[in-house]
Picture 1 (cartoon, rainbow, N blue to C red):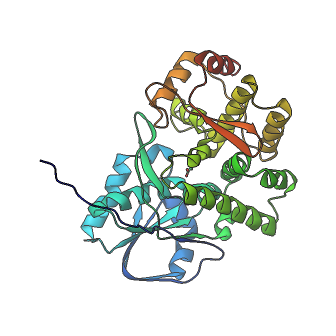
Picture 2: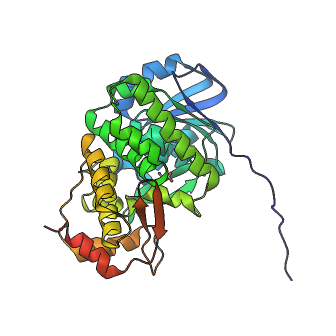
Length: 348
Ligand code: GLY
């Protein structure tokens, strides 16, 4: 005997991304702001001036990729239980990508899912991590291997927060912007080559263009069954670099910068990309002080580490490889010999 469960239904996960000064936000429900001590020290007062809720709580988690783990998720969910949050309650992710990913993940699992809003404070989280509903945490096997797709109710991108961002973190965010341009938007790439991001208006235009690109990709492929995977350009390599360096040497965007250079070299070795474009991308990364080199100690170990990445099946490693600026291929059939040859070029 079989019993069918019919679950066909339209789910509308649409939401607005506001790129502007933070508006006044009013919530007639319990709200918890999840943040870290650094962001709280710099910007919590500003957020509280723009926020009203029937009950408001602040949850702080330690700062940094090394803390994007089960312990921090427990801190968040236990505090929600302490304060008797229910399924109508709301989380606000207030910080960078780590806070955003963890808050979203906590929201996705707390009582089987509650709403959350993203108020990203770093460039990387404003242009990429806060948009698209990828949430998660790291474990000893690698980065973001535990997680869920859980779309926010809204994203508020206020360029004001970037005024206190350290230069290194700003550059790390630019790496994800370059990623968006190389994968989907040649004109945007040219714009970035000429742009001066110290100008407020240029920066706002770049934020809008990057978010529009990301929003378009997510609208086509929310759950990463197809083209959204192209946004993992550089990440196959970056995740190994971050893990090898125990998440304490490179910011995520910096590792992505190096990873994009590695992906380009692989594309070059396969004859898919011209050297001139490889050089243009490296030059753009260097213009924004994004690292482009890494010393691989053990090529075999680096290669084996690809297999722990969730974007790879048992039998193949998936690489996102440009064919040129604005044109990318997702390939899981690159032969081991060519990959190792390219990695050898980075070996000490
Ligand atoms: N950060 C890549 C994505 O959201 O798909």
